[in-house]
Length: 246
Image (cartoon, rainbow, N blue to C red; front, side, top):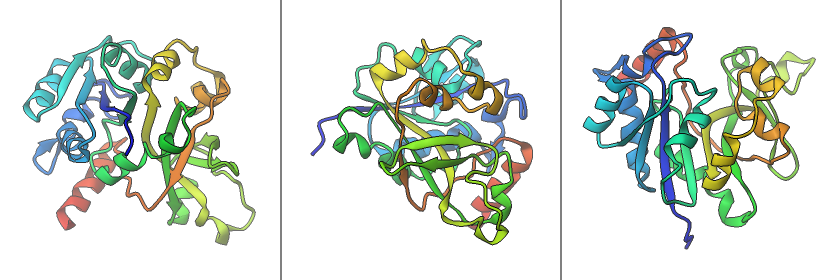
């Protein structure tokens, strides 16, 4: 039995570029951040802490059973925001559940920490699932990744990777979609916040590239994890449709 201790952090900023105020947007009658909190609590791994720069988000978080840390508003990424919130939290592993993943599976939250049990020197882990729809391969809102033989990420991109000349091969077990869920050793998360954003991170707008740029491996567990991140109002409608059928 693992003796590691965990805390689940949910970074949630109000001023999203593509969808301002989205943590408070209503989904099935409840603020989107409420759905994220409820699923994080179901994982039953440790305290759930919302890291936000907005009092309205903080109020909802308290209402739905999460702890809250009010952070600065000028963080470069969700991981930077989470590092501020976790500075004084007593745990070994911090799980970063994105505030725009209202349908995240609690089993996925539990799965993301599994590599730490067998890789004691590992600093960071994430999840992926096979791409099932060919259209997702070219969608810049769907982040793709490639793993090496050790099961560690080689690169993440909004572009189609690995590139294939045959359209018929753009789905399958080798074509992986990133699930926006991370776990870090707590000390590494605090160190991450001190690393300068790299050029590829700025270009792709993918914070995990900062980790690869600085030479740290990211373990990637692959499974059949449902993922529907909400980046736009259209994504929110898709989530609403999914919940109405569930």
